[in-house]
Image (tube, rainbow, N blue to C red; front, top):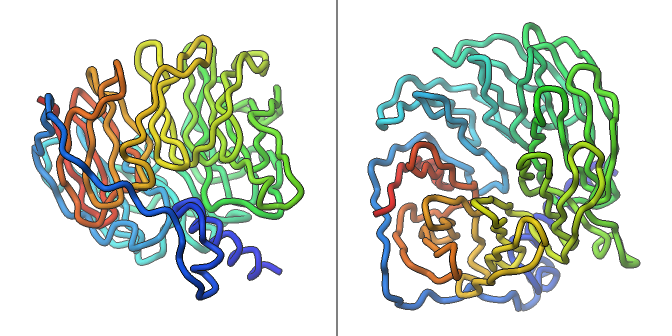
Length: 387
């Protein structure tokens, strides 16, 4: 039964990447999936400048995993699929690299001068951020598919079987566990938990539910439906929350696959507004708008207060875009061919483009101090600035 579940998850991961026609291509028939939109010329009014790039291993190694780097005040930490862990200065120099010799499924978590990654044996590995030396490791009930959190000496880990663990950062001792379970079918991946204030952790589940849990004790404070499964088949009822969530003030923004984008009161769990949307990539925010990459790689601007749609950019459809990141007056995304695209926040127009990594991008770019850091599928880490 477990093998059947794993195969199903992998098929659904392929579905989330390729769109229609996945059943024909998988079983040897004609591949009628929708092809990616061809890039066309446009008038560039902004330029992407590559400050530096550095190879950090094999990258994702063709796996559908979210190995987003972690950024500290002076370093960037990456891990590749085969377990090469690297510390790179913000100037692009390698501080240290170690080989963990394991297949990585989730990470990198960072906090309290610790680094955390997860492997395919269901273990989490905690290391010293100064030199990569091992602090401790622990086996959990399932694999970690997203980055964990650290808050007040509690390590918060989400596992693929629907459990949230609160562990001691000192030795991995279990403080609490919250078990939500998973539906029969899910996409491969989990959204990372996020912290609200110092006392709450918010997490999304494959059932379309969002929960607020106490950091210290793991007790449920509230639960809300970001989306409700509909349809007769398990495939139609997929409403996974795999995209990152955003907390702005006391409002939590969540988007689901085949479901909705919602704004939730983070203190009460009340849904403030909801609009139809499907995304497994993710969202970002700047000013008064939320920006979303949907399941067809269209980009949307959504009003944070009302949920009204401001604009839609469809000239990059089916190019397997990353989640967006906001920088200055622009939105930046990466695509499957290794291009990064700049989009105007005002009207959604394409304003800039640059080829960075031939193997493409899957991981959401990150912004620190007006610099964009983007981790390519090949394992190349690049630092970009916008002019």
